Length: 241
Image 1: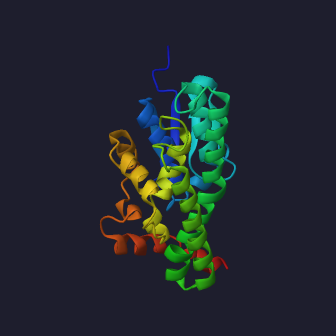
Image 2 (image 1 turned 60 degrees about the vertical axis):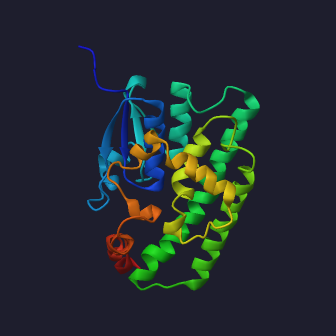
């Protein structure tokens, strides 16, 4: 009997990294099965999940069409999907390299820096650890990185080439969450125009509603309540210090 299930089984959650493969799959129109990972129940630390992703983070995919091959790390997942489906990654060697460069720029810079800006403001400070030096450092570095993006986007619609690539897909959910990181994007006109182009793409916006919507990350809805709930999820970590 043939397996009628889609090739891609995606384990993810509504976070900046977690949205990346969702955006790819929706934009490419690729069928997939969604397995939402519940952080409150620490499902990402379950032994069966750690067999797929030893780092105990999301997202992870399992490619049933390739002997149940597992891929973890969001950038690696985008790269794998791009090669598997021939989407969002140019065949031209130079353009392909540029796409990988900007993908690594997100993975090594924007993600970690904005993630720390979020952590010290949204988690550490509400739980009794206020570190103005760390907040200033990470917010300012995040702003600098967004300025780099703004410069790159001057005179172009996308980070690489004439169409959206995995570099745009990787960068958008992080850069667009500037509100949650407390970063000012005023004056970054090219970056804001890029946001606007992605904000109106139905497939991208549909992906951001999964596994459940988190509008507060992008400055919409009841942001104060969402921030309090987010901080409360990590309150127990304070007792481990």
